[in-house]
Length: 402
Image 1 (spheres, rainbow, N blue to C red):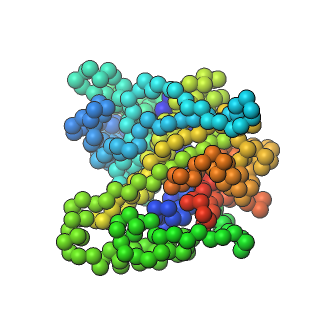
Image 2 (tube, rainbow, N blue to C red; image 1 turned 60 degrees about the vertical axis):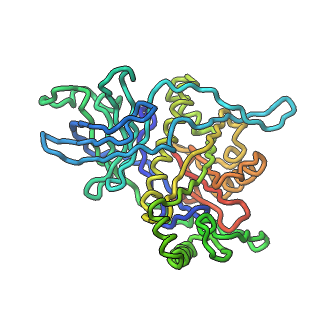
Image 3 (tube, rainbow, N blue to C red; image 1 turned 135 degrees about the vertical axis):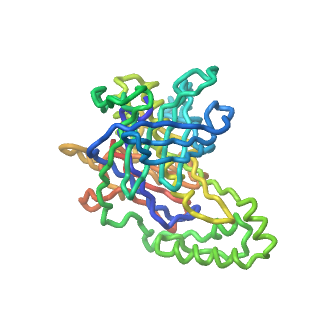
């Protein structure tokens, strides 16, 4: 059901971004303000093998006047082909992961427009044998400093009486809505290890990937990332002009591989929204997280460099279908009047232990998605938490309240 039962989210990523470095990721549920009906027209370039265009120009019009134009480009490494696994135990009580065999019937692609900070999901709505393609467009974009959601006007959130009297086709009508984003939390969203924990020392991964002669780096904390970026840039500038020209012609693609783990609270809400249809819930989960990681990837695409391109991709999604399968959150939750709360520091330790047991630390990052309201020292302003300077590459606690 694409984005229907999940609402829409604004994605915000800290500006200090480097592969395998500290990423401060925050996700906010946003409220909806006034909405208006708009017309959407699109024209596409050549089609890929998936029968979706690689490029799509989208014009959003209000009362016959162009309001915004999106130049969307499909992100090839963000797809619905995400390996999904459910957690459980075997006959001996040993934790196991079972791969989900789920066929996706819809043709869906994920697109970006950096200038508009647009994160868009496009679904082909007619048969691929037809020469004229029809699409459903939904997502978020920014215009004049304001974040907007855009959804088809037949979305369950809206009624058909919003249809404009000037409409010539119901299919091109969409609802555009300004979204309100709450302010960021004030608490620290990273943890340095205690004195008795050995600090990991390794080469700067970015410089290593680029073949730089830069020496080892001993810290990857948020306070040092800016300095590290400057050092990497300085080192790169010392290469020969010929090498620089070659890199500008063919920037190096660097991929950050993420394993995402969801707790029972997330799965249970999707299952409830799907009215108990497990396959529908799993399909919705996979589609939503593809959309989320498209937004995360967008932030990295905003790093302008002639030397490298940083790409973020979700390589594995692990789901907790029962409370007993989520030992990283369930023991640390506290019942609440509206949302159950979760101790962020405790859950961070829980997912660290889980990642170790399940051999997940081979990936660049392991990210926990929780449906509980994160807290630190009793405050609910926490939106995420991560460890720094540890032997594990990176563990992020990702607040996801549906």
